[in-house]
Length: 329
Ligand SMILES: [Cu+2]
Image 1 (cartoon, rainbow, N blue to C red):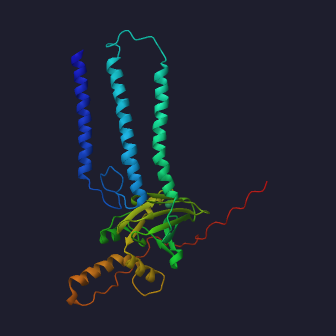
Image 2 (tube, rainbow, N blue to C red):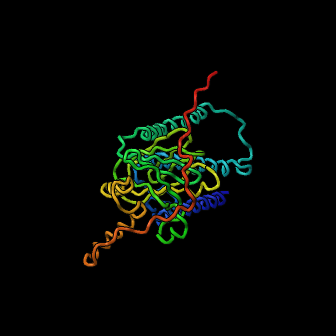
Image 3 (cartoon, rainbow, N blue to C red):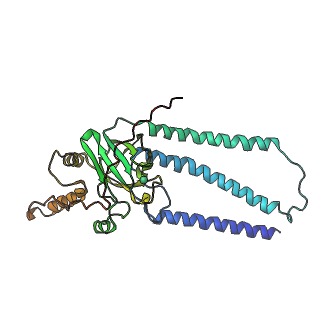
């Protein structure tokens, strides 16, 4: 009997060790990409905004240890019961039932665990609602099936952002189904307030690296915020099933320096003649090329014009629904 127990124990230990090895090896090999999903990645996307940093802490330091401990405890109990109290090992079972101390423990302990989790959970929830003073406001309107972006405080009226067609994405070396024709552009280290609504059905504005998601509901405006730590490109998606092309309305946020943002705003609001938003990369390339070869003369900043939208994007239904009249009874 003893040798069989030994065998099961060895088997269980071996299985646990291989799972742990596989997990750590996976974590070590997959270097997570910033602002986009990583093929084969197993964790959350790297954080690039205060809310996401807090969410990481909540997940990694609070939830994961508790979940792991509970799983191991339950697994241990199961194995113990299977091995110690099966029919052969324990032919004459005990006849008693109910054990008041044990019942009190298994009621009170989970309540205390949940209350402990709630402390951190509510702190994070309040952080989401406690938006600092906004430096930039972006209004994101969800359409079937593209986004419209507007900067009401910067005089930028709504422009349409479609998913970049596959060949264009390949040509530019950007991820297909994440990259768009006209991204959102925001300055680094500034509080960005996102106001979102839907023009036709319910969409949802979500960017994992910033830890934000807000439903875009026709007839009402939801608010969320982020403050990007670093310059870079961050991708998100519509997160509410909104029709056949739901999977094809990605969100792209370009985080740039304040000077680049000011230049972009000047261009976009029509206060300065310059290239379009999608040529920010081209501008950067031109700038670095000019820096690398100053003798070659001034680099032309005018990049390729923005590609035509893949679908005729007519924001006809842009007007938000009229406020609902209170129902009189
Ligand atoms: Cu949608």
